[in-house]
Length: 360
Image 1 (cartoon, rainbow, N blue to C red):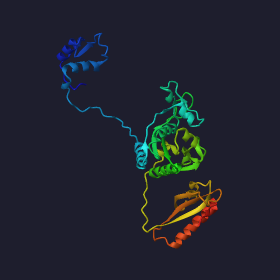
Image 2 (image 1 turned 135 degrees about the vertical axis):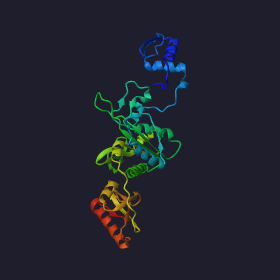
Image 3 (image 1 turned 60 degrees about the horizontal axis):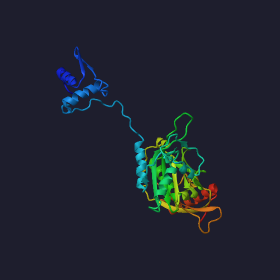
Image 4 (image 1 turned 180 degrees about the vertical axis):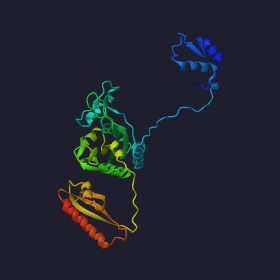
């Protein structure tokens, strides 16, 4: 075990000098531990006594003979790193917050959701297990509100969801992202969610919903394959002001486990051989019409969001939407006539399906 060849005489002499009882039984030695050495519990401890007296420097430098029989790789690590790289490249900070929150933090969320209370908290500020990341992120925003007018940060961490009585809570891995901006905070975080969807190759969409803590009309559920995996929205102004923040605050929280389970290798498409042509289309849409509805309506066309308008001249109950139509062919450059025809088709389709009116 030591890698040393010790003679019987050296071992007996060393142990006797240390007060151990020695009895030879054939080629073996029975060792009796003295009563004042309660630290000696087994054979390895006796060997350590031998090498301690004879000298650690005599142990030869050898490679360990043990080799791992099974190695478990964290296959999700690369996707966590991809998420962090994407958000850090977008200018966000990564934060790490405590898994415990105070009752005062929960009360300021204006939520009736039941949190998990600890029986023996270390302090009043750590008396509950958090079920989401918003309470912790609001405190981060409150402490950093004076350093910049706009800032954003994210966290990948586990939270604790109640389970059946007598069972430990579930611990899903969440991605929480929060942004503080003078305006357009919701649009900013929605763009980051779309970017993650593209980078990971996962079709995450948003559908309108009432979400606790979020402003009415500025909240939604994040859906993946018809399953709700999180929520997104702009936090209620009353909650934001209670944290002494005078700007907009928005964010989202998504369960990363179903997201990583749906990740697929990216597929690349060769660029068009001929030049493309683009046309911007502006329409009036009913106020409740979402961009996801527009995309579902125009599945046969390559369109992207440009902007919205709600200023002077907007019809009652309407909002202006501008989208960009991109056309390309494999065998020729799109003509002006083809472009005009495509614009007409898109406008007519939006009119029939979503009651859109052309803005001219």
